[in-house]
Amino acid sequence: MLRTNPVKQALKEGRPVIGTMITEAGSTGFVWMLANLSYDFVFIDMEHSAYGLQPTADMIKVARLAGIVPLVRVTDLAYNVIAPVLDAGAMGLMLPRVETRQQVEQFVRFMKYPPLGVRGATAGRGSTDYGGASPRELVQSLNENSLVILQIERKVAVENIDDLLSVPGVDAAVIGPFDLTISLGADSTGSPQVEEAIGKVVEAAKRHGVASGIHIAEPTTILKWYERGMTLLGCNTDLGFFTAGAGKTLTELRRGTGAGANAANEIKGIHV
Picture 1 (cartoon, rainbow, N blue to C red):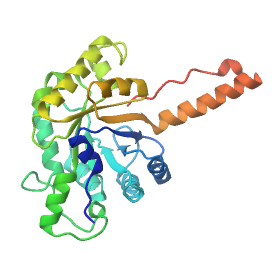
Picture 2: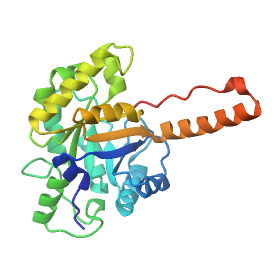
Picture 3: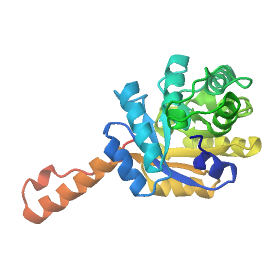
Picture 4: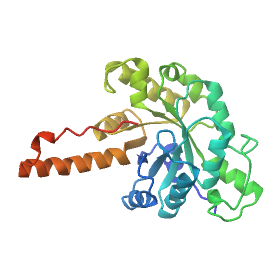
């Protein structure tokens, strides 16, 4: 079955979408739970996890069945990474460490079928829910519905942002705040120079008709940037949610019982 991509459609219409990221759990059940909670999308992280193709493909399949849009942050700009994940049924990919227009053009080529790119065609896979499709139907539907996302997390990417976002086929630019902070030599993700850089990306996205977004642990930060125009809103990770929830429970119990109270620590967000 050929599907439309509700996240891509929402972004094209300027509507916000909310999701999170799986980096450690590696559980298809976790994906289904997120769908039950009505998250719009889930990023499956291949860059900073030990996930290979098979567990990633399994989570993608369950996401499609459960009704949550599966997006994947790939490890690198390599066809043998990108094509199998798309064939498994990922409805969008995010490329980390983007710096140049040439990288973006290659990313689009790898994600799209001819004449827009060089992706090899196969039907009856996860991308069509194991159903058939004619060559024309396959190319038209998957080219239209695959979501091309750039992760902006380097100083040079901010400097080149107009060049990056003017590449045909780019749908969204998502800030990687932790790496961007490091690249800028700043003290924190909320420092003025980081916020200035993020603002430049948001304004460039508006100029080029591209969605912008961020993935960070703090909802207040996300809402602030939503007010500035961001619509692809990623909040926290499986690690972050587990650490915060488990830590909060432990802190409450230690305070209430006096058992090991000195060991209670402040729980901080997990950055992506």
